[in-house]
Amino acid sequence: MARYLRLGINVDHVATIRNARGGDHPDPVRAALLAAKAGADGITAHLREDRRHISDADIERLMAEIGIPLNLEMAATDEMLEIALRHGPHAACIVPEKRQERTTEGGLDAAGGQTHLAPLVGAMGTRGIRVSLFIEPDAAQLDAAKSMGAPVVELHTGAYCEAEGSARQAELARIKNAAKHADAIGLECHAGHGLGFETVGAIAEIPEIVELNIGHFLIGEAIYSGLDSAIRRMRALMDTARAEITGS
Ligand code: PXP
Image (cartoon, rainbow, N blue to C red; front, side, top):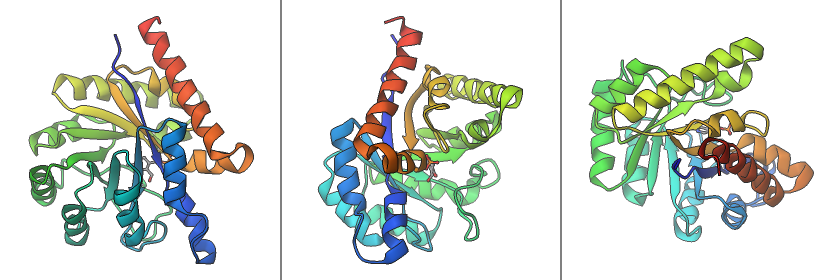
């Protein structure tokens, strides 16, 4: 029987729209509450160093109000570590962050950054936070995550989502191999970035993956069909794909 596949909804871009005008509408916390009702198992929010979308006050309110696990995405900085330790979210995902990028481009260099990353992983683990590293689907990165004691990895699905035809199949194969390797060395495996209705099925069919984090596509889709309907459709596509591998 395949493991349950959790859905984490990333509410960053509700805050992007709010911040385009200032004020407090639309509210990412209201979106998170709606996501929970629509079947989200958790909420993800990236507190960027430049606070371009999610704010410190959003994190405070998400922690206090949502009633389902919060996964805090964060850069590997002292400031973010202090914030994570202060709030103690259910999970924290360490991501690479560059000021000029539009979104998280590529995964973390876990293999090259062990000296810097290991103390953060240790400190958050001691606080009871489930730490994951957002990495490329690559065995060396997985081995590095394991060796610094991270319990979870999130595989970057951006290249798979952007590619077409045989290139997409090649990216999918990389993700499948990485998920197998993660499982074999005892890492919990998540995946995310760029996923939409068309791309989610093949990822949801990978039995070692137990959580998907999805944001931008769903917030965009909500313009047409509403957030509730968009999330329910994503959940249904995940469930259908998962049923394919269990034969249920
Ligand atoms: N997972 C991680 C680690 C991310 O950084 C992001 C983007 O913030 C996502 C998942 C969600 O990606 P998207 O918004 O493209 O669905």
